[in-house]
Amino acid sequence: NGKPYFPDIPSLHFSISHAKNMAITVFSDKNVGIDCEHSKRILPDKILSRFFSRDEAEAYRKSPLKLWVIKESMSKLSGNGILGEMKKNAIPFFEETMFIGGIQLKLYTLKDYLICVSSEEHGECRFISV
Image (cartoon, rainbow, N blue to C red; front, side):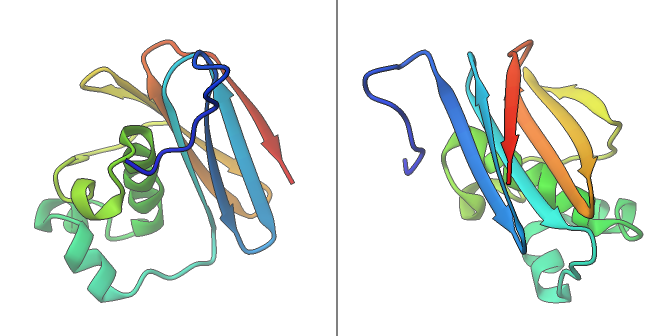
């Protein structure tokens, strides 16, 4: 498990992401994961076929980046990394805020970036972006 933590403050959880000219960190009182991507990023077909199920690829054909940030934030929440999580967690649809198996997912847009935060239900989150 490569998930970072503060050994002296076990109740403080955080996650970090970066893309192009943005770095963002989320802090929470619950386990948390975050991902950000520049909205102009194009995902190659090999990424779509490797990490998305056939149903997901069809459902997110018009906005695959949205599905990517959702799945990557979930993999950061678990600490298992993208290889072990991406196809396992099927996301059939997405709303700005939703719950899947005890995980709260929230999608944000900040400037030209798409951001997804995954947290244990009802965790309070604070962001820092640069």
